[in-house]
Amino acid sequence: MKIIGFDLSSRVGSLAVYSDGRVLTRTEWPNDRRNSAPFFRALDEALRKNSRPELIVVGLGPGSYTGTRIAISAAVGLQVACGAQLRGVPSVCAMSAENRFAVVGDAKRASFFLAHVQDGNLAGEIELLPEQQIRQRVSEAAVPFYSADDLPSLGTLRRAFPRAELLSELAHCRPENLACPPLEPIYLRAPHITVPRAAMTR
Image 1 (cartoon, rainbow, N blue to C red):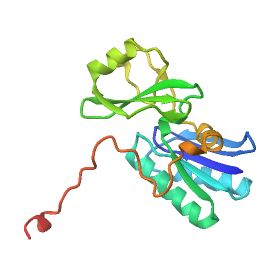
Image 2 (cartoon, rainbow, N blue to C red):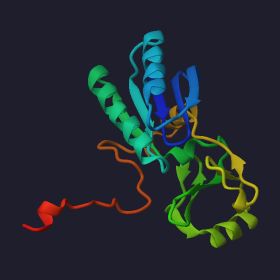
Image 3 (cartoon, rainbow, N blue to C red):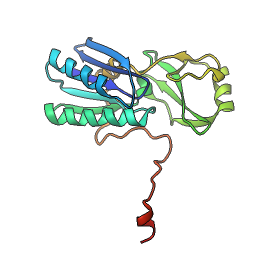
Image 4 (cartoon, helix red, strand yellow):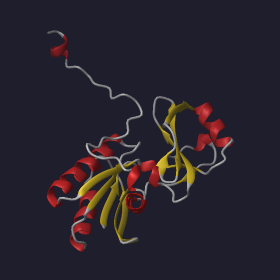
């Protein structure tokens, strides 16, 4: 099965085409949520070089909401165009090929998220914790801790970004772990909705 995977949840965008246990195409670029042109150039080039995918797998975060929404929208459009299956994987699951590891990320509002990954799948819920608790978890770590963010105050974290080839490999090897449409970004908090003033006065 030919699989195309991509992720825009971090500052490094990633795209890969995977087939029969090997990576056919892999590319990364600095990911700017204000400019998605590099992603669409990489996607166009990958589709030109390879036949239509049978499965599209996209990273669902957590991370940049804007980047993740762009990736999901592009995946939905590509599915309509080529008739492929569409699936999603938490982006943190594709940050390492190790069987067990943890991922820490900046969740804003003086908090951080902590995700544990085992055998390519989230092990439990993603936690939101203050800095002191995160630092304690890192200091007591029994598994490698990764982060796509620059977080020097938390001690020694291994730097890594979600890798599209790992997304694709997870989709091939562990299809039971995939999220089915409709796909949504992984929200760490309930979305904040601002009600228009005019609607509030009715």
